[in-house]
Amino acid sequence: MKTLFSGIKPSGDLHLGNYIGAISQWTALQEKYKCLFCVVDYHAITVKQDPKALRKSILDIARVYLAAGINPKKAIIFQQSDVSEHTELGWILNTITKVAELEKMTQYKDKARDEKKEGPGAGLLNYPTLMAADILLYHTDVVPVGHDQMQHLELTRLLTKRFNTNYGTTFTVPETIVRKEGARIMALDNPAKKMSKSSQSPNSYIALLDEPMVAHKKIKRAVTDSDNKIKYDPDKKAAISNLLAIYSALSNKSVKELEILYEDKSYGEFKEDLANLVANFLTEFQARYKKYSDKEVKKILNKGAKEAKAMAEKTMKLVKKNLGVN
Ligand code: ATP
Ligand code: LTN
Image (cartoon, rainbow, N blue to C red):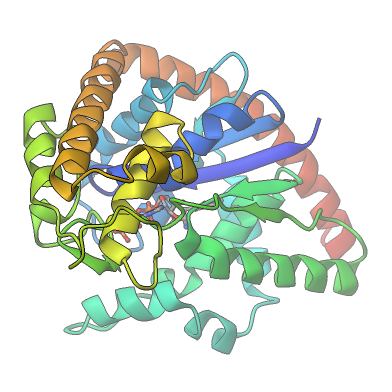
């Protein structure tokens, strides 16, 4: 069986973009791959976190994984900081990475801009080498992520090849999996910007823990395009294409099917149906979410950490041998 790795930072409430772009793919993939789903807490601290909020967020992200349908009997769910090999390999990968390669990353440039006053931290710059370490430690074959992570994955592939060239074949070169529609869910109030939990305007995103009726209103208020046609065309009709992508992901109907279904319907009717779909999805999701107690989540994370650690230790033995440090 091939190996799959993915992760999300515990740095605030997850939204529908995270669910559709990343997590919703995972549940189907866990049948086909040996999966590791990580709560990447050492990535979260690349920007300032409140320790109390972070502790809660780590459990909440794992709870989202479970509520989304990740089965801890099939997949390994664990917390990054429980497996110290991640930071150890991250350091090693830093030594083969150029500063210029890190400075080029769009996410770094965006986040660095947010830290105008004191300037970006070194952790923010080195974020992608830790991400590469996450992936390489498990000889990962595939990494499902949203569109915004593709550049990091390209760098990971480059570093993998560089390490293998310098020190002999050690790591598998990972492939990226990005879903066709919905890899980039856009803000509801501005389809030129991606849906993001760091947005200032709560109307721009739907949090997975939003009250279903609040989410219903947000969809009804979402901006649309000027004509009244329900057609998928992300370049010319960004707003309606975004709503179609959300509809398709939550209903398992293809965008084509939806276009036919709504051929003679108005934006109003379309948005009312989508609003109900989203509200129902959230009601069911939140019911599953509430079922997992902190105690249960911690137990699952501990078991996952043991399994991941055993795999990571094995890889580090090979890495150290090939590097010449033991
Ligand atoms: P922030 O808004 O603080 O930058 P984020 O919402 O992008 O954070 P991450 O933890 O960086 O959240 O992302 C988790 C996963 O969700 C990643 O795989 C990412 O690609 C995906 N993702 C994030 N936002 C979207 C989006 N708008 N559409 C589709 N996928 C997304
Ligand atoms: N950088 C990713 C989170 C992340 C990740 C990973 C994703 C950290 N390590 C390994 C896939 C594989 C993000 O910001 N969403």
